[in-house]
Image 1 (cartoon, rainbow, N blue to C red):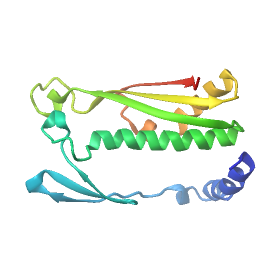
Image 2: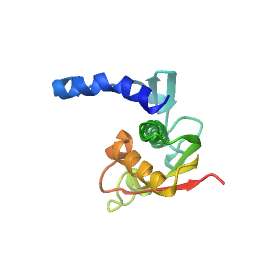
Image 3: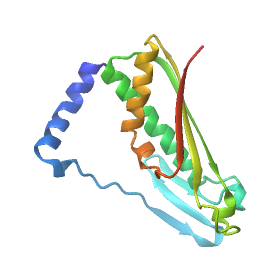
Image 4: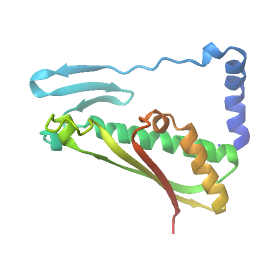
Amino acid sequence: MDSAALRQLQSPLKQKYRDDPLTAIVTMNAAGVLQPSQLVCQVETALGQVDAGLHAAAGGSGLLACSGDMLLQALVACSGVTLATVATAMGIELQSARVLTTAEMDFRGTLGIEKSVPVGLTSVSLQFIIDSSADDAQLTKLIELCERYCVVWQSLAPSIHKATSWQRLM
């Protein structure tokens, strides 16, 4: 898709949302069914059921999806799609790109061992490895806009240390 096709695709939606802002508010849903005896939540996705369980650091087997990992996977998906969309809108051709994320969490919080330790992620980093003929200033702007428009990135708690970086594919 090129920038003209993207504008043609999004232009009617943008105009609709300008004319009637309430139409821009969309309710998203997710659902799961618990299997309490197994400590599993079966989550329905567009691609089928995903069985989620405890992370190995909280006593899980490591064989089930972990919600923390799923959050990071959602971040990779959202930032990747956002990167591609913003690059298209800016007219930046990406020969290839890869998105990586890492996060830290102190499991003493979620296991109730130490009350002063927060429950949840304490830091998240997001890295883009990009193969493009765009110059460094364009790529820096691309990442800045990706941060701004990525829903999952913006939804992470402001108290979490967040960092992004990019590098060229060599």
